[in-house]
Image (cartoon, rainbow, N blue to C red):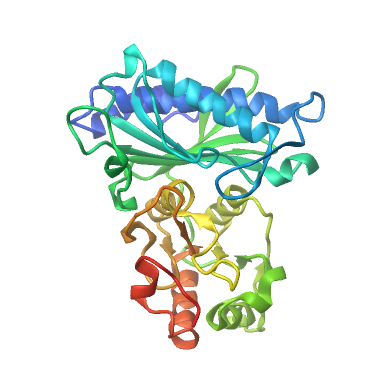
Length: 349
C-alpha cells in the first residue's frame, strides 16, 4: 500500500468492507475530511485574524464558547447538509440534536456525533486542539430519525475518528477494521496515508491525568498515580507524566508511544467530565481497534448504556496492561463505586 495514498482513495478502496453500504459512509467520511481541512486553515491562522477568544456565550456544558468552537461547529454541520448522508448531528456546541433537512439528505441513514473542537481552551496559547467524531446507522426506517436512533451503545458505532491540529494535521479513523492515520500534505491539500494499521503498545511509560485535582480523585486513582511514580526497573517505573489538556493530543501521543489517559470522577463531577456520546465512545472505539483498552474504571466504555445526549463518563484509556492495572487499583481501593453505579448515575459514597 502506497504511503502516498490519499484519504479519498483509501476510503474507496475499503468500501467493500461494508456490504450493506452503497457509498454513503465513504462520502460521509470524505465530507468530514473536507470540513477538517477548512477548520485546519482557520486554526493555523488564528493569531492573524479575529477568530480567537471567547464569544461571550456558553454551551450546554456551561463552558465558555470560543470563536473557533462556533466556527468549527458551523463548518461540520454545513458539510453534512451539503453531503446528504447524515440525518442527525449531535454536537457538544448544541443543546439539542439537529435534524439535517435538505433535498439531498431526505433518505440519509447515518447519525454523526461530534465535538467540533476538543481542547479549545488551548487555542489562544497555540497548543494542539482536535476534532472528535462518531458515526452510527439510524435504527428506524421511516420518517424522521429520533432521539432513540441516537441513544445507541458505543459498540454500535460504524466509524469513529479524530483530527489533531498540531505541528502537522492528522486525521485518524476506524470503521472497525483497524486504525489508520492520514497526514495533511499542504502542498497538495490532501490527507495522505502516513500511519497505516496503527497499534498501541501493550505497555507504556506515560500516564496522562490532570494531577491538579489529585485531592479530589477516588482513592483508586490516587493509588494508581503513586504506583506510576514508584521506582521499579522491572516495570520501567517511574513512568513519565505528560498532560497536554487536549484529549485528542494526549490520546494521539499515547497511541503512538504507549500510555494511559485518565479523566476520573471527582467530588465536583460525580458522573465524570467527558461526554460519552461524542468524546468517550469514539475514542474508545479507536483505542480498542488499535489494540488498547477503554474503561470507566470498572467496565468497558463501549458497553455503557446511553440515556442522554450529553451524558458524562469517567475514562481510563490506553495501553491494555496499564488500564488493567488502573482497574485493579479501582477495584481494590474504591470498591464502594459499584458497577451498578456506573451504568447510570455514578456517585461518591
